[in-house]
Image 1 (cartoon, rainbow, N blue to C red):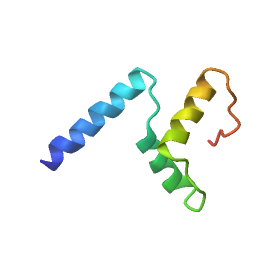
Image 2 (tube, rainbow, N blue to C red; image 1 turned 30 degrees about the horizontal axis):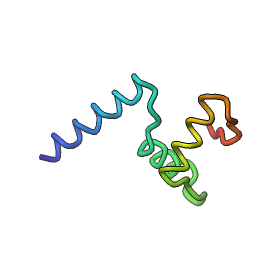
Image 3 (spheres, one colour; image 1 turned 60 degrees about the horizontal axis):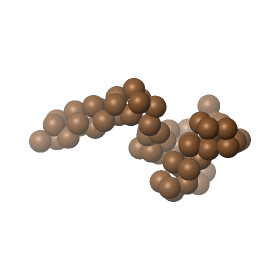
Amino acid sequence: MRDIAASWRRVCRAARQVFAIPDYDAYLEHCRAHHPDAPVLSRADFFRHRIDHRYGGGGGMRCC
């Protein structure tokens, strides 16, 4: 059952990349790996930031 769940997560992640949908789980993984002491955005704030960044509303939070 775990293999099916892991496969499903990979399929979902690939679909998000194809359609340029922000991936909050990948953001959390990145933050844990590269910025463990820094605060993370809430899910709503993350999506708001990504939409603003994509459509010209700013983008001062670039990391890597």
